[in-house]
Length: 137
Image 1 (cartoon, one colour):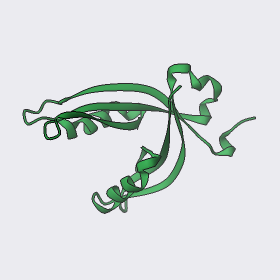
Image 2 (cartoon, rainbow, N blue to C red):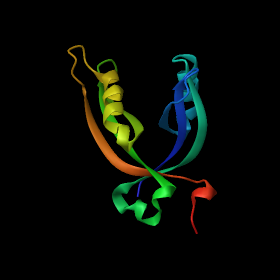
Image 3 (cartoon, rainbow, N blue to C red):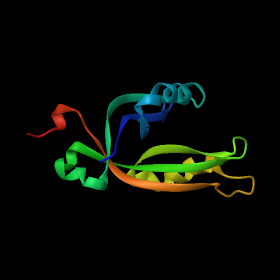
């Protein structure tokens, strides 16, 4: 079973009352947060780290519905003409928003003719809540 350490946070425009949930790999969270705040003028709030588990071995069977959120991993293998090699870009989206967020994500990897120059793979998984108040005995 594959796993990834992810930070779940809320992203919203400065001054907005509500925002959207985002899942960001823990290893790049600080850089991502800085970019969202300084370049894109977003606010990042309520960061919480936990594990994302792929659904290959049905990890949801070990948890109650209140203990996890469904999260889709989208991986794009993008060819760089400049570097003459493929590179991997991976993002995690709340499963119910994955299709619309995937379109935005992939729009960053279009060619001059408007075609996506990449292969895309998706995996379903869950992000496990670590808050003890949500865990049942």
